[in-house]
Length: 285
Image (cartoon, rainbow, N blue to C red; front, side, top):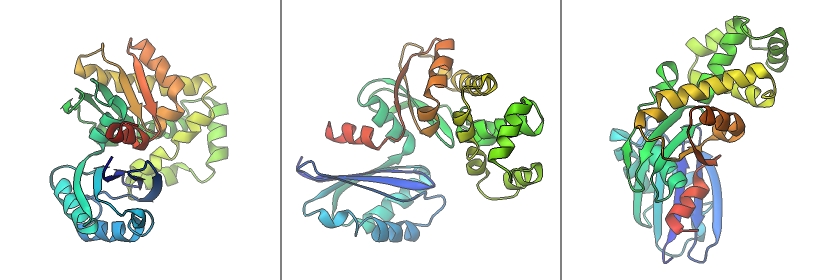
């Protein structure tokens, strides 16, 4: 490896950076999220200069190859991100900017064909042929889609709790853990406050903490089956492994596996974050 390699995986909340030097030394860093639909080109450039350059790029004394994968990196957002990185990283000999979905596909499938899925705050999926994304079923966001995501699982949980569709035991556990989550507060935060998807997803850890309860298992597995039905099965390739990246897939992997078995689908890799998988893709490590 002649050049140092800088890999970034960015969402709206945070960006994971990994610098790999020619001798194999690695430096990792987490910075703020860099979504070009939420930040201007100048703001992204300033954030990279302030948060990344002084902390890990000071160790680079050779040419730099940069691979940035991010939420919002499509259409105009792609142009914005490329311009911001080019300005903030003048030492980069070359760089590519791609979507977080392609990053997930490369991290999960490497150079093999498969179905790559993201299950985090939101959800997404694609059919990847080992080089490019062949097809993508639009996730549609947490109101119309995002099946299996933290936002939708949280939405279903609070809806069932507030409408008393779950047992008294589960409802009591919920209000004991979220004492400020009154109906009025949940409605206000969901319909009037910014970023309601993140707010709803903040309730998803409750499902992981109480996944031994049959009611919780039923809710989670039913939602994962909806994800498979409305997304994965649309690709018409039940022969391919279905890989996952994201916190929901990682922490609820047993229920995910059971739902996949019920749909006669084969689960492949499950990664909490894509950064190490991307390192393996780009370096072969």
